[in-house]
Each structure stands twice: as C-alpha cells, then as structure tokens.
Amino acid sequence: MKIIIEGASQGFARELVALAAQHHADLTITTVETGWTADRAERYLSSLTGSARRFAEMVIVDGDGYIEADQLRSALGKLNGPTVALSRALPRGVKRGWWPEGTPAPITPVSDPNNPSWHQNIAYRMDRENVPVFRDAVARLASVRSTTARGAAAVTEILAEHGGTPVTALARPPRRTEDRDDQDEKGQQP
Image (cartoon, rainbow, N blue to C red; front, side):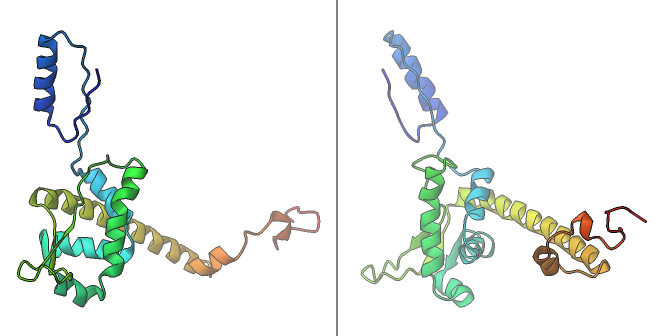
C-alpha cells in the first residue's frame, strides 16, 4: 500500500504508521517538508532578477514581512517585472528540484479589502515564521557579495599595478611564449 500525504508533520506520520501496524499493513510513509529553510531561501533569492531581489529584500528587511506597495513603487517603479519574476521563481525551483511541490510562495500580495474589485495590490507580505529564515538568507548573500567585491577590488588593484584593467585583461588574449619580448627568435631566454 502506498499513501502520499503532503504537508504532514513527523508526528502525524508516526501515528499513521502505528495505526497501520495495528492492522498488520505494510506501510511506508515519506514526509516532504514544504517549508522554507535558509538554504532554500538563499537559492530562491539568488535565482531572482536584480529588481525582484531588491523587492524581496525590501519586504524582508525594510518591512519586516509587510510593506506597502506604494513604498515599493517609489523605490522600484512599476512592480510588474519584479512580481512576475517572484511568481516564476517558485515553479522554476520545483522543476529544478530546489524545493518540493507544494512549497508556499514566500511573498504574497495583499489586496484592498475595501475595494476587492480593484486589482492593484496595496501591500506585500511574508509569513512571520519565514521572515527570520529569509533574513538569514539575505545576510548570507550579502556576505558572499561583499567577499566577491573585495576579491574583485584586489584583482583590479593587481591589474592596475601591471598597467591593466579588468576590461583589458578580459579583452586581450594571453600572450603565447613565442610572442614574449624577452626571448630570441628560437623562443630561448637570452
């Protein structure tokens, strides 16, 4: 017998196995955690476009899980692009195996309760239990960006010492040994 129950807690799964054992049934239960972990949140945020990531960071950090749509619009302009990117990230993650089917969208729109026929959202929210998880992911990504930026600055400094820039270093093919100025016509050092 195979039973699939999505979103069941570990405790519920244990009770179901015990019940099946009482009836001498051979039952295996696999539970799938559909919640957000720091790794899943980091992967989600990393997969977003720049404007969608900024949108998410504003909901998470600036709004602590709830931010007015007008505040987002003033910082980002039209919200069509970021909201489409947010909505596409969830099924893309399921398809790539980053999180299971049934994982809830981390950021959801809030409609105007006084004017439900008007479709412009008044705010965006994140469930309270997800805010610390996503804050951790934002911090981890900021740390990676900071480390990458410091590494890039070091490379730029080294290139500058040798008369180059990152652009010229990428545009110029590496010199072959036969093209070096400190070799004679046979490729030997003088």
